[in-house]
Length: 61
Image 1 (tube, rainbow, N blue to C red):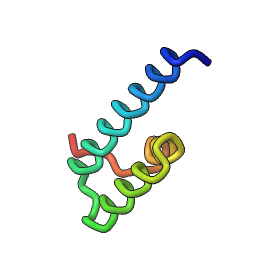
Image 2: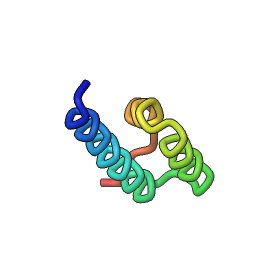
Image 3: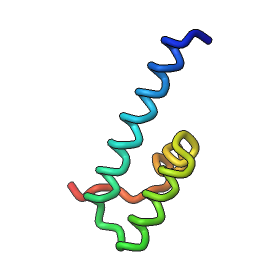
């Protein structure tokens, strides 16, 4: 894989993770839940994002 594709992939993962963390902070989850999901995304950027997308707290609408 070329360096350009790797860089673009890394940028996309970063943007998605920042978006997910913003959504977590705005959600109605407990403080402990917010910390758990944020740490999961920070430690496992791709897998944590996917797990959060499927099972994580949602922002109030």
